[in-house]
Amino acid sequence: MVNHLDIAIHGADRDVMEMQDYCHTCGKRLNTIGLSDDGPAGCPECGVLSRLLRAMGLGELPFLEGDAVLPDLRATDKGAAVREIVESLVDSGNLSDADTESVVATLLRREEMGSTGIGEGVALPHTKHPAVAREVGTIAWSAGGIDFDSVDGRPVHLIVLLLSPVGHPSDHIRALAKVARFIRPRSCDGRSS
Image (cartoon, rainbow, N blue to C red):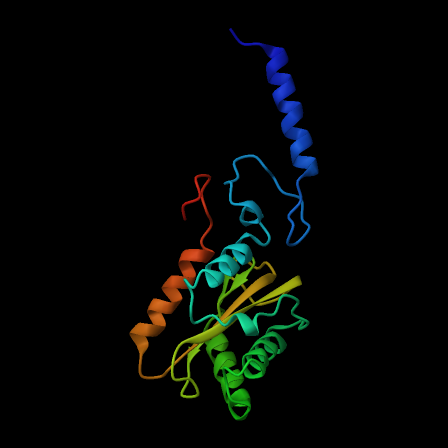
C-alpha cells in the first residue's frame, strides 16, 4: 500500500537537499538526484575538472603537468587562453621559452581546421610539435567561460591542452584517448557513459 505521507516527506527531503548542495569547487548548485557518490565530480560544471585532478594525482595521466595547472585562467578569448596555457608550460619548465610562439601558432592553426571545443564546457586543444620529446600538457579552468567555437555553442570552462612529439602519432592518439576516458560524462553508478 502506498503511503502518501512518506512520498511527500521523501519529496520534501529531496527538495531541501537540492537547495543545500553546492559544488565545493565552483560553487554552483548541485542537482543531487541520480548523482554518483564521487563528490564534486557530480557537478555539471566542474565534475570533469575534479576527475582530471584526481587522475593526475594518482599518476593516471602522467603527461599532464601538475606544476602547470591554471585553476584561474585569466584569458577571455581562445587565442589568449592557448597562449596563457602554453606560457604556464614554459614557466613550469616543460617547454622552452624560445618555442612559445611556434607552439601557440601551431595550436591556433589546428583550431582553424576545426574547433577542439568538444562541448559540455570542455575543450581539448592538441597538436604535434618538434619542441617536445614526449607528450606534455596541462589543464586550465575559466570560471567565466571562453568562446571556443564549441560544437554545442556553449562557453568552455575546462581546457585540456596536449602537445606530442611529431614522430609518434600513435602515442598522441593514446594520450588523447586517456584524457577522453576522464572527460566523458559519468553515469549514476560512476562508470563512463
